[in-house]
Length: 232
Ligand SMILES: [Zn+2]
Image (cartoon, rainbow, N blue to C red; front, side, top):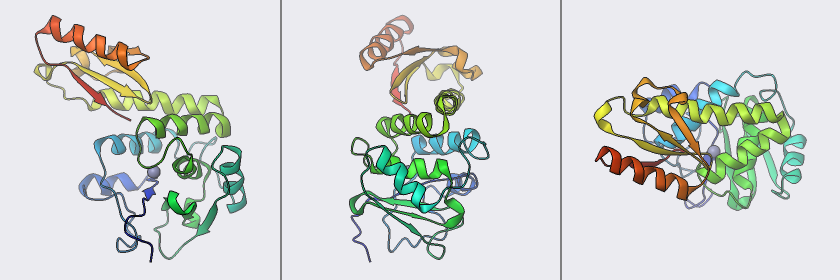
């Protein structure tokens, strides 16, 4: 048994989010034994990532195609993850499940999860600059891997998906204020019309300091607290 402190992560292909939306406690696939793997809870940030993956990668010809174990190893080597082990585990994982164990340099897949975009998701966890979780470093690395392995239009679709999924999920009530969002290392100021829920209501910024200045301006103009929300 692996130590409980081992960090793992889970790819969440299309059919996972329905369940995880109800079960707030875990990202684990139903077949994964929680006694063997420590499981992080699904945060709102992670839920958005899973929603975006499902809508722009799952079923797409450029990203959702079968890969072999050897191709996953080669992909990891090409992108600086070094030498890794890839294990097919049809008993311990559900049919769309995959788990990265960065400390051990191991990726485990159900054979049904051996697809390019799931491999990219899991390999991203093994990159030295990423580590655990699905924060800005993760989604930026994943977008870059999609650019490289699936084509720039795929990476762009992923980035656009992060933004378009982010904005409609903001609180719709106007009195909830203005939010400055960070998406994949970029910053989006969503103005009070955000209740309409279109990404066109947002303006992009490209640095944390610019986002902070925008938040400050909005706060003074509206006499209302402005939150800086990190999305992914
Ligand atoms: Zn993950």
